[in-house]
Image (cartoon, rainbow, N blue to C red; front, side, top):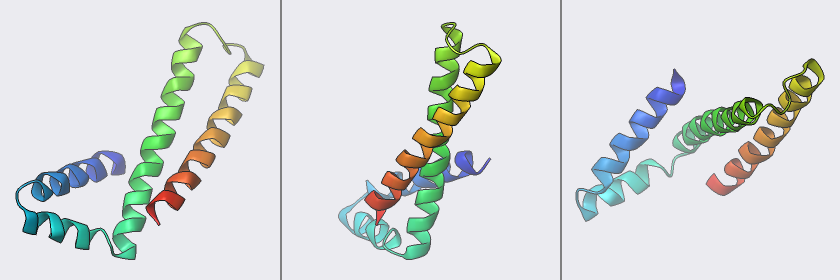
Length: 94
């Protein structure tokens, strides 16, 4: 639910930033606060995990990792890849 609300908020911010130069500057100032950066990171973290898990399910649809052992390995890989990408997103946002 928070991914949907966060993306809606970010799209609204994008829309307002495209209206004029002043609104762009206001959007940039809004995203400079630590609270806004943390909220952006949370939304990105949710999107990253959701995307990586979606790729895992696509791979499973190809018949790879459908066993119990394969499913456990796929889950572990999903968590590790997501964690690395989420940390990278946090470094990028700072």
